[in-house]
Length: 175
Image 1 (cartoon, rainbow, N blue to C red):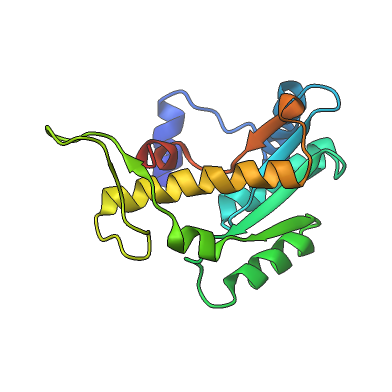
Image 2 (cartoon, rainbow, N blue to C red):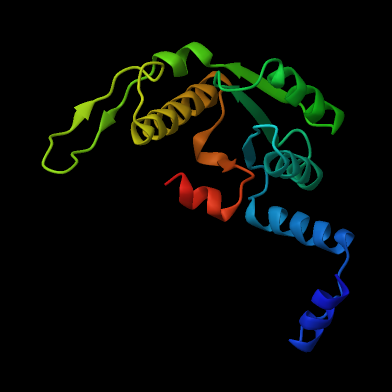
């Protein structure tokens, strides 16, 4: 570790911040990017990225402006949704759980034309084997479920931001 620190020092990098400083920068950035009174819909998978995102949003904006939603899509491990909810609540985050397992299993979608083939409708997710078809079905179904959640919770789409704690490479990978 010391060799790495020495290398960074030689390159001109300075270690003059703490985790507390980093948290304060994140909280300021959240407050700056959200309009007064604007709500934020936070999609929480229970992973470290979305959990940290939810906690930072809560600290920056308060519970009245953060709506945290966990969508159970049916791909979770046994009792994992309960563990996710317990962990979020322990961190002070109130979470709405959406059971969309059946909706995901039965979902189909329209696929774009590929290599001289016309656009086509996929089979049900629970029957599809093609990885690209699965990825598109899951992505489209996820957004459809989010739209339903927004309507059911009567959130104003004109005064709502979507927050999803994830890393840049994950966004690129998921298209």
